[in-house]
Image (tube, rainbow, N blue to C red; front, side, top):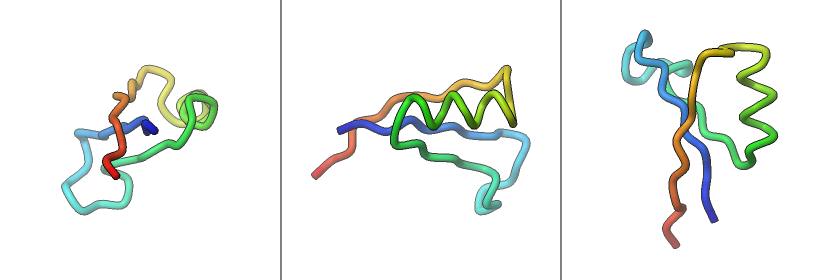
Length: 48
């Protein structure tokens, strides 16, 4: 299983808007369309 992670470098560490984690590509794409069309997310494997 993987997740997509977005980091907003203009926010301070600990700010709720600093990091977003998306369970699906569709969820990430919808969020980006509305909030940060120029942004990117990185895919990471969830360790079990």
